[in-house]
Image (cartoon, one colour):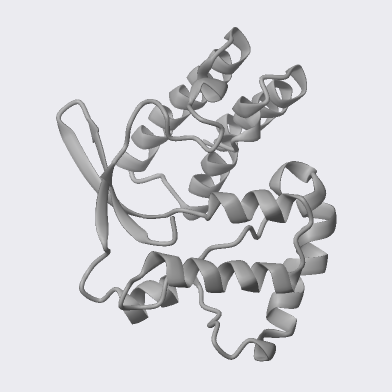
Length: 198
């Protein structure tokens, strides 16, 4: 956490490297419980000292509506938005996009290399929540099939940014994570929409 990594993904003898930025899990949990802007800044300062890097630490707070819970209704308006409205209050903390941080501080590359594991990488302790149950397996299989189909569409020269974004919407984590009929039905609707587009 609080570093930029090269994530190495290997499958069927092929290997790809992508930059990976890990959101701070502990901060995310506090933000879910309604942490205010000052609390977030205190966390950022602490994390920056804890990492012990020559360049400033990259601390990524939660910025989305995370599953419609208190972060959507409380954290974003009460904490995240004020961070930027009142940014001049914290002269020792810089506000950058991840791309700006990489361009400014990581011109020689990221600090570490990590390899993707099949278990134990989720903030809930493992990937079982994403894989167990017939409903989850059905959604995963349908999205995988759609992804393979889109790869062929791209190879034929018919891909587009709009189609790519649509496919990414089909990969929304809630469709699988909750394992519920509601989210599986939402996944089905999205998948049918993208199939029609392709």
